Image 1: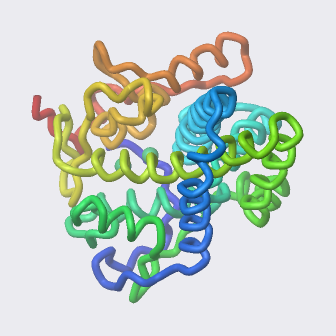
Image 2: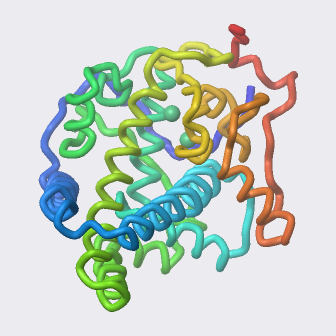
Image 3: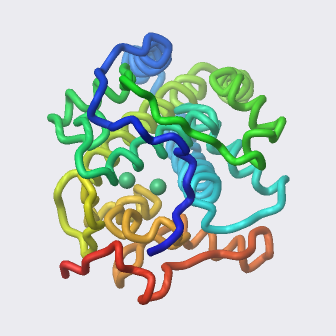
Length: 297
Ligand SMILES: [Zn+2]
Ligand SMILES: [Zn+2]
């Protein structure tokens, strides 16, 4: 067995007992951004605005979300000094999906629920694609007995992260002002509204398909959900689409483990470690410690 990062400390609750309820703050943020993008994107299109959108979406999701928040902050697959850590997480805040602690809660509660023998469709993504997307964009799961999640003091007491958690939505305003001065409304619409919309919807789309049946070498024993590896999406998901590998080896900074599984976030991690910006990069645990897994290949 391995020792995973464990933040759920009280788990008398079961991820099946509870109900889905609207979360009006979440709904307000997600739907306003998406609706504004829909209305204004066609009338503000320009090649420069489109290139800005492509670059900023790719950059923030790869460096901030996949490397900074997911592989470093959540799974601790490598270490970095506090300044590098804050920069990586801050770029993740700029994605516009949630604050750092919010992302940890979303990720850890879902992952904890999926590793139980049964869990609600809200966590297993077993419902239809559009219903699931609607839930994730507008709802929360109200537990009868909520699990208690304890975030480690090194993150919980970091004043910069506390600040980011309180203010994460406002950072889009800062970007919008900068983009307005650089290129006018075209840049604001494509660099903020279209980017944030695509990041959020893209994230939940990939999450949906990665947690539904599909190819993958590993089964995690006694888990309600087996994740899948989705072929052909390595480049546009920064390697996160090799999600079957990730459920089997959450401790590994490298997610694209087999030949041909492209993993751009891993390439970025390797480059940062070469120039000593990060250290202690972890890979998959050794063969003797895999008794929670079944190789079904
Ligand atoms: Zn994860
Ligand atoms: Zn997962």
